[in-house]
Length: 107
Image 1 (tube, rainbow, N blue to C red):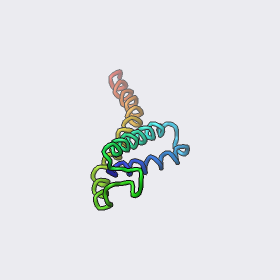
Image 2 (cartoon, one colour; image 1 turned 60 degrees about the vertical axis):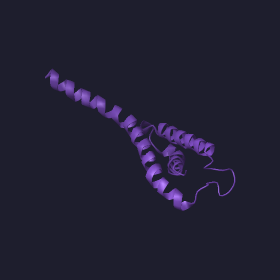
Image 3 (cartoon, helix red, strand yellow; image 1 turned 45 degrees about the horizontal axis):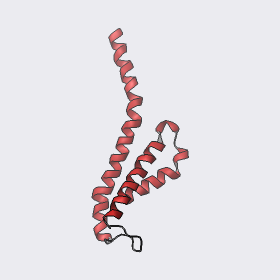
Image 4 (cartoon, rainbow, N blue to C red; image 1 turned 90 degrees about the vertical axis):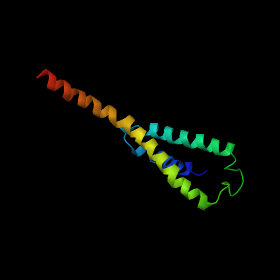
């Protein structure tokens, strides 16, 4: 029920510091992925009444939320960052590999 809090924290950090990140890293793509995940999970948790519009907002206690944060929230956030990393860094590496491969064939 609180798994999205890790993703929300990272989304807040990347949004605040987005102007300090070079454009080539496409931080806006990462922000969109993170905020999309947060929005989707927030709606899902509201629909299942795991989040309520009045304090304490979460229907479970911290002792139930911490294991979920660690077992679902952290891996989910790392998966989002990994997909973003692949989207950003593979296109930079593949042309170099292609050039190296074709240069070896032409010689």
